[in-house]
Length: 234
Image 1 (cartoon, rainbow, N blue to C red):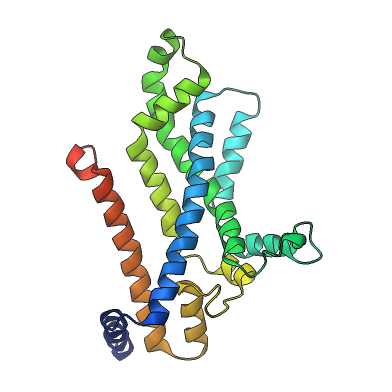
Image 2: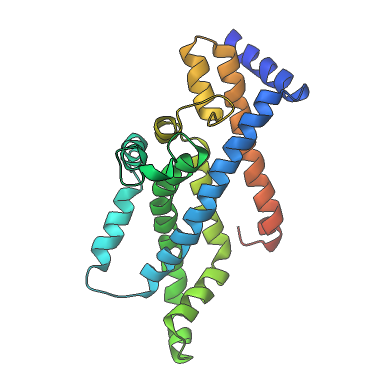
């Protein structure tokens, strides 16, 4: 109990004094996660809509596979990305290993199936409602997807926020491909892991509280900017 109190006090001290290392690590965490969520959303949201609209032979198999990939083990993703980006790997020539870019690549692989699967679940019901209208208007498949993406934007926002929630707390994959290098690839989760290993539980808890606060703040800001509460649809 004392360690939790000490962690809270330490977190408050770090924030009030604008600790330079904390700000650097927090900004890097946000940059890596938000970039990964943006790329994953650009891939996953249209993919989820496309699966809701399109009918093809192996559609159920693809959806089942996508749902299964939601539980993709991060350490396995990290290992695969590590092999691909290592000097002996096919992409080793780019020198991306142990950089924030490698961390973003690993997170995109983890988050895209999650965002696509949730968006598919959300758009499937909307498509059932819009099906007859959009067919009668003789719209193209791309026009239908664009319409569903726009009208279902608030539900799709939930999919992206779910991706952000998982990405900001990710540690296994980014530890493998990022290496937890100080002033280069260290983020909040890897810093927590490091301080816990050193037995510095108060500082680890402080970083954990900052991480939770950061995740809550980003969600509140996005909700406020998207005006979801004012719409009365949530």
